[in-house]
Amino acid sequence: MTRALALLDRCLFIESCRQCRKFISTSTTHEAQTLCSSCWLTLTQIKPLVEYCSLYPNIPILVASAAPYEGIIKQLIHRLKYNNDRLVSCDLSILLLKSLNLLEREFDITESTLIPIPLSFWREFKRGYNQAELLAKWVARHSKLPVQNKLLKRKKHTKAQHTLTRFQRISNLAGAFSVVPQKKQINRVILVDDVFTSGATLAEAARAIKNFGIDNIAAITVAQAILK
Image (cartoon, rainbow, N blue to C red; front, side, top):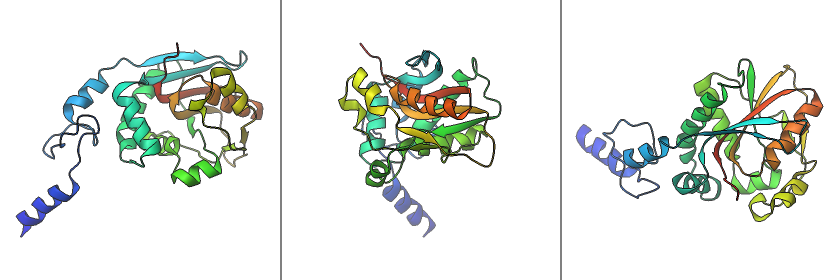
């Protein structure tokens, strides 16, 4: 009976690789849950990226990203945001920890608080979750940094950023965020998001936080879009 139940468990809950569609063997020990060992190895060997987001000259934000927004990682993020594949967030979060380790080389993360970029009420209601919050909570558990998802609030529903040009993105996000005072004082902030594209979202979020009186701000993302 025990053997039969174990076999049934493997048949019912086996996962297939989101990239090559091969079944992920339950006997393997690699850390990914949604990619086979071969595809995961390819992804983890990609060189991470770090640069300043300087849309607002007085608020330069150091942003660390695990990989370029292309190939496998682009497909995984798309599955998380639009296909309700929440299990993907576990693997993306492992990569996000890679971003945090890179950030730590140039930004003191001691006593920092992770702040996920919030969605508008209607977009989160439609999706059922905020992917940045899923990622931030997972990173918080493994980095021992606190996460605060109530500090930053999205005041208005905006157009989807991926349909806009760089200048339209900046205009679209203007005044989109506000800060809600918290009982516990926060001195250092690490913004968390899935993709760093033009930097409009991170810059506008950082501006709201800086206007609130917090000066030490950096960001980590899973991927960075390489703009032509």
